[in-house]
Length: 219
Image (cartoon, rainbow, N blue to C red; front, side):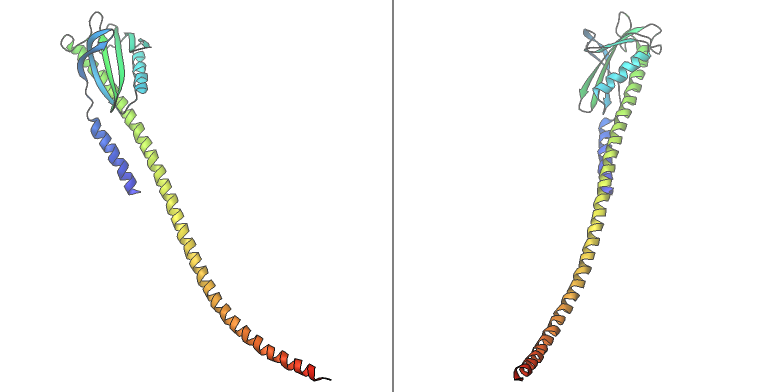
């Protein structure tokens, strides 16, 4: 049981080491029909469908009208931490080996946000995306942890069943040994009884012969 727990702990430790710290990076990518400034972050252990659902929920919380075709488009989002004016937000979630790559672009109205032209808005956007990525990574890894714990419990239950069966088999063996010992005693007694009975039969035969002779002598 300890070995099973250690294996799962090592697996999760390795998983978390690979995850490392969540960082938002600035880049340019094809989004909103052109190559625009974007913010990119990796959400570890997550599924694309879960990230898309959570991002759309976040955008709706900013009173945006949200559609999802090739990319998630949030129209007229009110994100006061970034700007007092409404903005359009574009996002794409792509699957990768360690989770989901989320690419986000903010159209502030005539210009896409970038760190050089919009330093204050950029910092606020980075914070929003970072918090989102941290929350979603924790949710995904927690779900993985629950799943692994469930597997561990199944293995531990299976081990307990095997131990119970082992105890039962040992008890049956001891019972069989006791029965065999009793049967061996019975065999020994049976053998002696056969010898005694055989001797009695021989003696009885002699008695029968004597009586037969007496019967034959009567004329």
